[in-house]
Amino acid sequence: MSSYFHGKVIVMNRGIISAIGAYLIWGIMTIWLKQIKSVPPLQILGHRIVWSLLLLLIVILVRGDWQELLQSLRNKRTLGIYTLAALLLSANWLTYIWAVNSDHIVESSLGYFINPLVNVILGVLLFREKLRKWQWAPIVMAGMGVIYLTFDYGRLPWIALTLAFTFAFYAVVKKVAPLGSLRGLTLETMILFLPAAIYLGTLEVTGSGYFGHHGFLQDGYLAFAGVITAVPLLLFGSAARSIPLSMVGILQYIAPTCQFLIGVFVYDEPFTLARLTGFAIIWLALVFLWLEGLINNRRLQARLASVS
Image 1 (cartoon, rainbow, N blue to C red):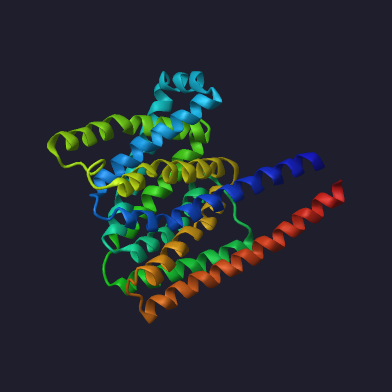
Image 2: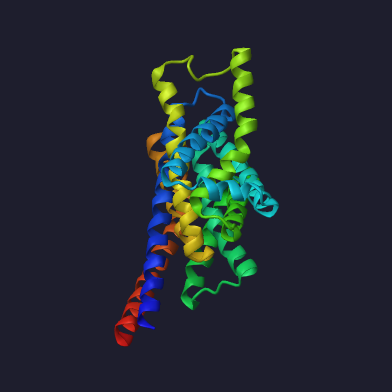
């Protein structure tokens, strides 16, 4: 019994570490996107797909996972699941790229503040996940902060809502997807690769492409899309399969906090006192949530010690 609980804790801890790593990278991705601001968003999306697939195929080759990947291509149900995941992911990417390079970093961070709440709701409704009693309090507080910020904008925050819902449903698909994080992400990018490659090739023929025409540094930033895209998604895919969706939603506040700080303090996007109030409510909720998790982990450790 004690070994079972110990193994479960190890898996949970690895999932939590993977999720934190993914959200930190997504949080600072805004800086990379700003370096290629002159490139149209759709071209950036195309490069993210192409370079990511090249990197993932190298990893697949090194690991010797070709046979399992080819088997998944013959399964219609698997292809359907990952086609849906690919479409949701590409919609999320394109919206975020446009938002960052149109000086809407703070509003995009609002989307990722909303997203964890959507994840929690979907986790409860679709997977019957249960929250501990004291976990509800910070979630309600965070919801109040998000609602406050939404009304402060004085309009429908379509950027935020698009980002929130596309990634929430992507998380749901990844939760039920049959493949591991590496093969799953490789299959997703394979599905997107052909249209992306045709699009980028057409741009080259018409003289509208950016890669190879605007300096070595910008080419390097575009090629780096493979690393900065694939690594956090692999971490996220691993986390989504090993920890509850509700916990994924809670940890996801890391990314929008980084985005918010970068938008305000690095790129000087406007941030009023009213918005500060809304963000402060959410941060207070996160402190409460962290304390609740710390207390629960200590109780779990005490239980393990008592049965060992």
